[in-house]
Image (cartoon, rainbow, N blue to C red; front, top):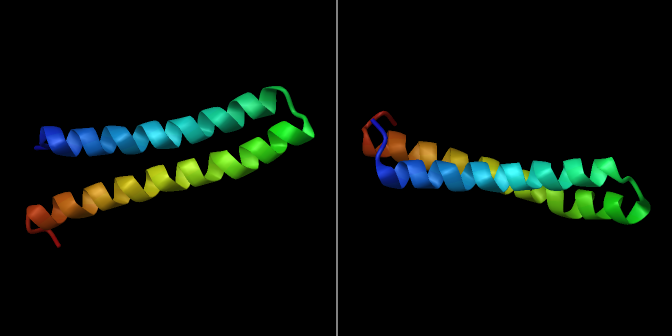
Length: 68
């Protein structure tokens, strides 16, 4: 069972990753050199941060439950 705190952490991770993917999608719809730089500078770090936050949340949850 997940706690409300765990759900909040996973939701935050999903929002960051979704924001990064959204930036890349919007930039892909109107592709110019400036939007390429914008998507390359903002998109991947946001997706990566979302992935890291998700892994940290899952790791802490597993540690709290004694699975690790």
